[in-house]
Length: 140
Image (cartoon, rainbow, N blue to C red; front, side, top):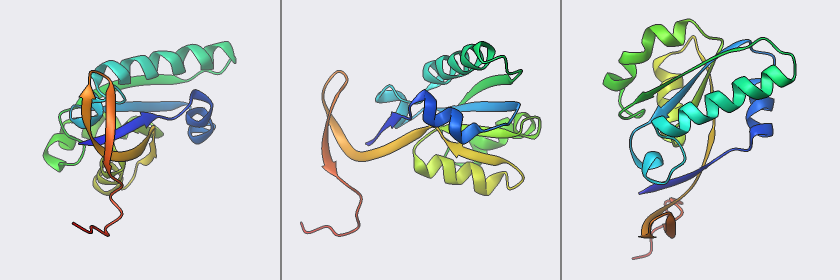
Protein backbone atom coordinates (compact mmCIF):
# COMPACT_ATOMS: atom_id res chain seq x y z
CA UNK A 1 0.00 0.00 0.00
CA UNK A 2 1.11 3.57 -0.68
CA UNK A 3 1.64 5.56 2.50
CA UNK A 4 1.63 9.36 2.51
CA UNK A 5 1.44 12.24 4.95
CA UNK A 6 -0.01 15.71 4.62
CA UNK A 7 2.24 18.65 3.93
CA UNK A 8 2.24 21.29 6.64
CA UNK A 9 -0.30 24.07 6.36
CA UNK A 10 2.52 26.58 5.82
CA UNK A 11 4.02 24.54 2.98
CA UNK A 12 0.64 24.09 1.34
CA UNK A 13 -0.13 27.80 1.57
CA UNK A 14 3.27 28.63 0.07
CA UNK A 15 2.55 26.32 -2.87
CA UNK A 16 -0.87 27.89 -3.40
CA UNK A 17 0.69 31.34 -3.46
CA UNK A 18 -1.53 34.21 -4.56
CA UNK A 19 -4.23 32.05 -6.15
CA UNK A 20 -7.71 33.12 -5.13
CA UNK A 21 -9.67 29.98 -6.05
CA UNK A 22 -8.70 26.38 -5.56
CA UNK A 23 -10.08 22.88 -5.40
CA UNK A 24 -8.91 20.31 -2.85
CA UNK A 25 -9.21 16.81 -4.36
CA UNK A 26 -9.21 13.77 -2.10
CA UNK A 27 -8.53 10.21 -3.23
CA UNK A 28 -10.54 7.22 -2.07
CA UNK A 29 -7.77 4.62 -2.06
CA UNK A 30 -4.57 4.15 -0.06
CA UNK A 31 -4.24 7.71 1.17
CA UNK A 32 -7.71 7.33 2.66
CA UNK A 33 -6.61 4.22 4.54
CA UNK A 34 -3.55 5.97 5.98
CA UNK A 35 -5.70 8.99 6.99
CA UNK A 36 -3.87 11.47 4.76
CA UNK A 37 -6.05 12.28 1.77
CA UNK A 38 -9.56 10.87 1.64
CA UNK A 39 -12.87 12.71 1.53
CA UNK A 40 -12.72 13.53 5.23
CA UNK A 41 -9.18 14.88 5.00
CA UNK A 42 -10.01 16.91 1.87
CA UNK A 43 -12.90 18.56 3.73
CA UNK A 44 -10.68 19.28 6.74
CA UNK A 45 -7.84 20.72 4.64
CA UNK A 46 -10.31 22.90 2.73
CA UNK A 47 -11.85 24.16 5.97
CA UNK A 48 -8.43 24.91 7.46
CA UNK A 49 -7.41 26.81 4.34
CA UNK A 50 -10.65 28.81 4.41
CA UNK A 51 -10.07 29.75 8.06
CA UNK A 52 -6.37 30.56 7.70
CA UNK A 53 -6.84 32.73 4.62
CA UNK A 54 -9.74 34.52 6.27
CA UNK A 55 -7.57 35.22 9.32
CA UNK A 56 -5.01 36.74 6.95
CA UNK A 57 -7.72 38.92 5.38
CA UNK A 58 -7.38 37.19 2.02
CA UNK A 59 -10.48 36.51 -0.04
CA UNK A 60 -10.11 32.94 -1.35
CA UNK A 61 -12.70 30.46 -2.54
CA UNK A 62 -11.92 26.90 -1.48
CA UNK A 63 -13.97 23.89 -2.51
CA UNK A 64 -13.32 20.19 -2.02
CA UNK A 65 -14.27 16.96 -3.72
CA UNK A 66 -13.27 13.31 -3.54
CA UNK A 67 -12.74 10.82 -6.37
CA UNK A 68 -12.51 7.06 -6.04
CA UNK A 69 -9.03 6.94 -7.60
CA UNK A 70 -6.99 9.90 -8.80
CA UNK A 71 -4.77 7.62 -10.88
CA UNK A 72 -7.54 6.68 -13.34
CA UNK A 73 -8.87 9.17 -15.88
CA UNK A 74 -12.41 7.78 -15.79
CA UNK A 75 -12.73 8.93 -12.17
CA UNK A 76 -11.04 12.26 -12.89
CA UNK A 77 -13.58 12.97 -15.65
CA UNK A 78 -16.13 13.45 -12.85
CA UNK A 79 -14.37 16.63 -11.68
CA UNK A 80 -13.60 18.14 -15.09
CA UNK A 81 -15.97 21.10 -14.72
CA UNK A 82 -14.81 21.83 -11.17
CA UNK A 83 -11.17 22.07 -12.29
CA UNK A 84 -12.11 24.67 -14.90
CA UNK A 85 -13.45 27.04 -12.25
CA UNK A 86 -10.32 27.29 -10.08
CA UNK A 87 -6.79 28.60 -10.39
CA UNK A 88 -5.20 25.75 -8.40
CA UNK A 89 -6.01 22.08 -7.89
CA UNK A 90 -4.58 20.77 -4.60
CA UNK A 91 -4.25 16.99 -4.87
CA UNK A 92 -4.47 14.95 -1.69
CA UNK A 93 -3.46 11.84 -3.61
CA UNK A 94 -0.14 10.07 -3.82
CA UNK A 95 2.36 11.43 -6.32
CA UNK A 96 0.80 9.26 -9.03
CA UNK A 97 -2.53 10.99 -8.49
CA UNK A 98 -0.93 14.43 -8.71
CA UNK A 99 0.69 13.50 -12.01
CA UNK A 100 -2.51 11.96 -13.39
CA UNK A 101 -4.53 15.10 -12.62
CA UNK A 102 -1.85 17.32 -14.20
CA UNK A 103 -1.71 15.14 -17.32
CA UNK A 104 -5.49 14.89 -17.64
CA UNK A 105 -6.25 18.57 -17.02
CA UNK A 106 -3.37 20.27 -18.82
CA UNK A 107 -4.83 23.76 -18.28
CA UNK A 108 -4.85 23.30 -14.49
CA UNK A 109 -2.12 24.24 -12.05
CA UNK A 110 -1.89 21.10 -9.89
CA UNK A 111 0.07 20.99 -6.66
CA UNK A 112 0.67 18.14 -4.19
CA UNK A 113 -0.89 18.36 -0.76
CA UNK A 114 0.79 15.17 0.43
CA UNK A 115 4.26 13.73 0.59
CA UNK A 116 4.31 10.11 -0.57
CA UNK A 117 6.61 8.46 1.95
CA UNK A 118 6.86 4.72 1.20
CA UNK A 119 5.08 1.50 0.33
CA UNK A 120 4.10 -0.36 3.45
CA UNK A 121 1.67 -2.43 5.38
CA UNK A 122 -0.47 -1.70 8.40
CA UNK A 123 0.73 -3.17 11.70
CA UNK A 124 -2.28 -1.86 13.59
CA UNK A 125 -4.79 0.96 13.19
CA UNK A 126 -2.82 4.05 12.13
CA UNK A 127 0.62 2.39 12.34
CA UNK A 128 2.45 1.56 9.10
CA UNK A 129 5.63 -0.42 8.50
CA UNK A 130 7.81 0.53 5.56
CA UNK A 131 8.36 -2.41 3.25
CA UNK A 132 9.55 -0.64 0.11
CA UNK A 133 10.92 2.75 -0.89
CA UNK A 134 9.89 2.22 -4.55
CA UNK A 135 13.50 2.83 -5.61
CA UNK A 136 13.36 0.33 -8.48
CA UNK A 137 16.28 -1.73 -7.21
CA UNK A 138 14.65 -4.87 -5.77
CA UNK A 139 17.08 -7.49 -4.52
CA UNK A 140 14.69 -10.34 -3.61
